[in-house]
Length: 262
Image 1 (cartoon, rainbow, N blue to C red):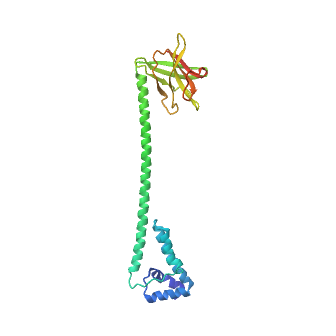
Image 2: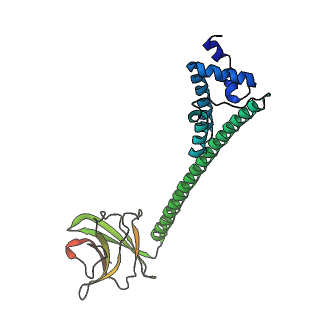
Image 3: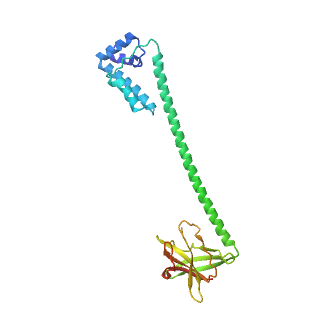
């Protein structure tokens, strides 16, 4: 029989699986010893079995892999002389092991996909919660603005722009019953880094006496630009200046942005 016909007959696969009779096993071993092509083919079959086992079992450790590789390739020069079997039990065992590895690989893949889907769902859930919280915050701000605008007890005091910025403007909503004061700062430019707007209640006569009633902190994040400040009992006017972060004890007059009388 020609070498190629001998290889194509399938006997070498049965040899690797250990299902040949003793005589057949000795015959293949003798052929492999004399014919390098047959020996190389047996080595190729053994490597294919190792590769299949390794690729389908993600948890095959490097130690176990090296043991198998040493047994099949290094120790025996690529040819494993297995004990002959008179039945198909060994072949069935190999087939079952391969099927088990395929099943383990499939289950591992499914598990990984499920884990990825869980992470995606949790991420989407977090985004939805964040959006919901943002909407609720905006809704509360809207309700506050509407309540202030609709309160008939509020006195509206417009504050006009001054020399530093003639286009600037603001409004004071002052409830003289509760003395609560709200500032609509939507007409003010965004303060530069390290600066903050400070609101002053003014006593105009008999002399000018400014009293700080609050800072417009978090100007950028306050989308409604409506700020609650301290009460302003007896105020005759209001002004807003631009001050260093943290505010000042007295107003910086050349940074007076808006001013208005009651």
